[in-house]
Length: 140
Image (cartoon, rainbow, N blue to C red; front, side, top):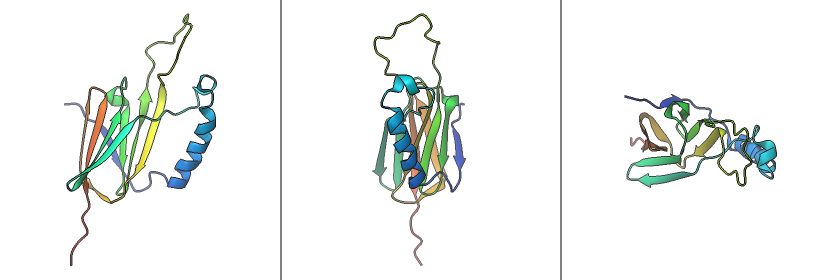
């Protein structure tokens, strides 16, 4: 059975750090062909609420499962990894180059706390799915 690397912690980064990084990356994306080495691409994601849980899905086509890492705190999910290029492209002249390779990362701050104990994740056909259970307030 294959496993997805999941780490748990309380410090996945702050929204301030994320917005500063986005500002820097905005200028790198002006002409990506000149900045491909430094850039971090962001996979498309869906986040939905279902009953007592939250489901996070990330489209990671072309990424091997062993190159995906999920980090979870009680209020955030961070998905990161690396999409490796199959070849160097030597001897090719690109007419269009839109597929991003290299490091990727997404940090999602959740609107409710979640229970780290009951995380379930799967990776099928390039789609990572993480199921999280909401942490319900304790009634006294």
